[in-house]
Amino acid sequence: MTALDTPAPLRRKRTDEIVDAIKKTIIEHGLQPGDRLPQERELMEQYAASKGTIREALKSLEVQGLIRTRTGPGGGAFIDTMSENRAMSLLSNYLFAKTVTIGDIYALRKVLEPLVAVSAMVNMDARAYARLDAIIAIYDHEPADAQERWDQRMAELDFHAVVAEYADNALLAFACRFLQRLLKDLAVARDIYVQPKPVLRAEGIEYQRKMIAAMQAGDADGVHKIMSDHMAYAERSMLDLQAELTGDFLHDPVARGRIGKRKKSSK
Image (cartoon, rainbow, N blue to C red; front, side, top):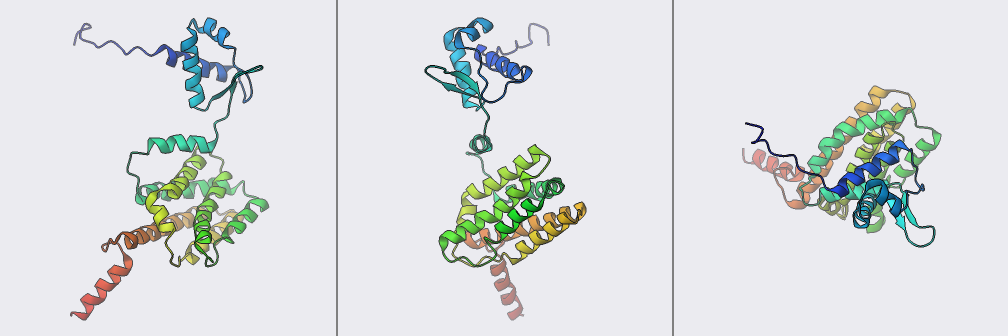
């Protein structure tokens, strides 16, 4: 290929270049939430750009959750902090048209939840353990009605969200909480959670109690092993409930039991 055949690099939009330049300025100057960016006229002069281009760049930063704009006296563009909820919403939008299954979620949870539990262990204190005990108390009994049943299922996931709060690794904690949110929002999981049937949660609670004890004992290997087993058990339970809900007899443990009995009786 000759130089003439080499495709020219795509030219970036001027707006995108200004967005990146403002981001760089925010970092280099250590700007904090609440700090004001230069006024529109100053930005136009600084970047040799039109009013429309600057406004488009500021709008892009606002959509990204990095700034907020205020009109009127004392208004302008101010550094903002993107909330975790907003970040997860944006990431959920990316996955909106993609197929995400319970198996997909647990493929990651089985790897990440043990790591986040070990990371959290050194930061857990009496208040943290009290919070976990309070959450377990929400679902350590049969629900009185449909609302309590739903609240219990959400609390089971909240247990792991609290553990993640104490992790040293912010990225790992975010990933775990995002997976927990996906389970709360996934249509098939929601269908499972509202089923008016008893949920066998005693084994799950036992895993959680053992993990708390291992944390308090400073047993990192034990915490990792217990959480790994807990996630494997949770995945099996969810997939079995899904199979029962959808009539997937190949994966429904109850149906498999019936088939096994028929085979024995036919011998």
